Image (tube, rainbow, N blue to C red; front, side):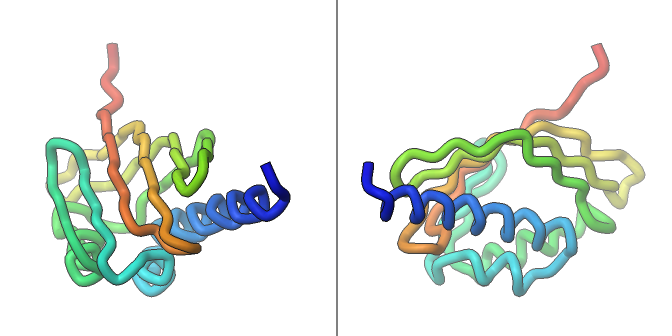
Length: 126
């Protein structure tokens, strides 16, 4: 693997860190700056969105209040793909707390996210 590929992968991880920080701060501009114009966002079993405008509307989801607490556990890269694993908690307007683990698969085009497939699983008390 060439040094150029390593540098490219490092910048992809930084883009994901910047993207996640945008969610933590509730900064739509920061989030959207990480995306291609025709970005595809799929949350398996929940929704499929195409384009920055649809992405932005989903960020503004009325079911939630406040900013989420997102913790990245690890990121793994191969080529133009970064997989991020972590946890998220966020207060919902109905009084419930979203407490979940996620695995997000990011596909890059250059230094922008062109596709995101997310998997979300609620933490349950056993």
